Length: 138
Image (cartoon, rainbow, N blue to C red; front, side, top):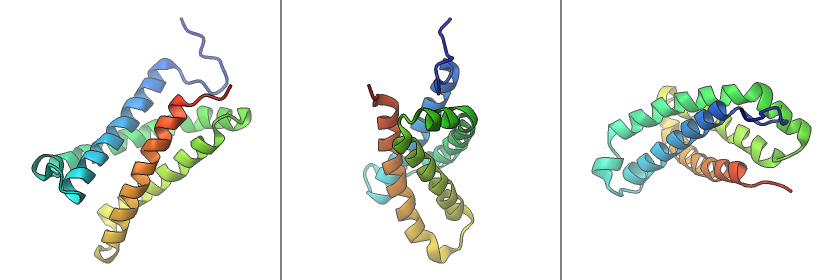
């Protein structure tokens, strides 16, 4: 059995769940961006089913975010490791949740700027998520 008592370290099952949820949400969002907004393989990547999977995986990513807030965030702040990337992810995810809700429930007149904001922040989040998981301070 692995030692999971190190400050801020998630148990393996939780770490894998968070990674899978965040990557699935990011990759389905990027696929839809490529197809719908950038017209790359539009028939496949811009299909409604890709958008539906993005919504489903966004729910999973939201659950994953909720699972790391109580212990991982607190431990990360206490250890002062990866604070910039961790807090940036939290800010990006919060904004992505709000902009995603606005895309679904918001008024039509703000839809275009919200779409642009959502995909720009989503792309930035994906990069920061990858760096946060890979980068280690010695």
